[in-house]
Image 1 (cartoon, one colour):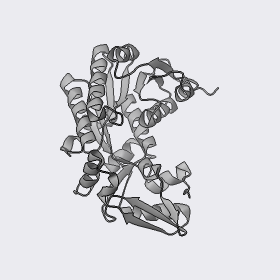
Image 2 (cartoon, helix red, strand yellow):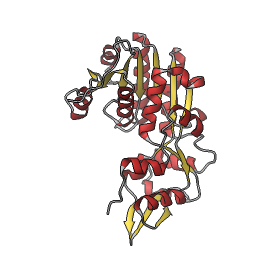
Image 3 (tube, one colour):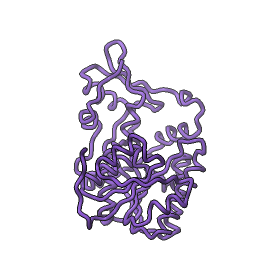
Image 4 (cartoon, one colour):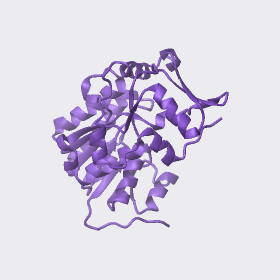
Length: 294
């Protein structure tokens, strides 16, 4: 069993969503830094939770829809990482409820500092529903007067490979509902986790208490060329109509917002100062070993 050594006097960091993308990346980065980590999980017996336990992570059962369980799980924690999602049946209203419950629990137990992963542009009144819901959470944290840092990541690089560029007629084809000449900022989830770990262990590393995280900025045409270079194949980009989103209000609002320059305003230099190993898209594809499917 592989474990991570840490100092008994290092801060105890509670991580919400530790078996998910951002929480998992944060927990791993904290472990690599020698921190003590407590993972708040719904099911401690789940394989992902047990994998964390095998690295020396303390597991605590908690559900943001059960505020008392969250307060119990946070007791004794010095710092807290939190994120929320709109991707369940409760949508953005549920996300706001979860975020407020987390903030209230942090305040109730007196944890020293909260790092909340929000979204790039949350504070700029984008009109994108899941950006606005994260801003409501930020506002609640501010209203409580909690010592807090807001990380605002831009578009995840992982989104580009979730459905995967396709191989057609011997070439890579990248398709998004976005004109090919519109720049899109992006960031790797691992770098969000590394930034969160840094901010948790030393909040002064994020002056002003907020940063919009970004690792690269590319147009659709440039994205296709990066994927093509990684695959060693010719590549092209095809812009899709917004209709492919099937009337999804949230996604339609987001992709429309992307075309309204400036959209994301990520601090690429500030992100790299916080995480010197920040990936650009080409580096991320190389590090993850991406290969085209089909």
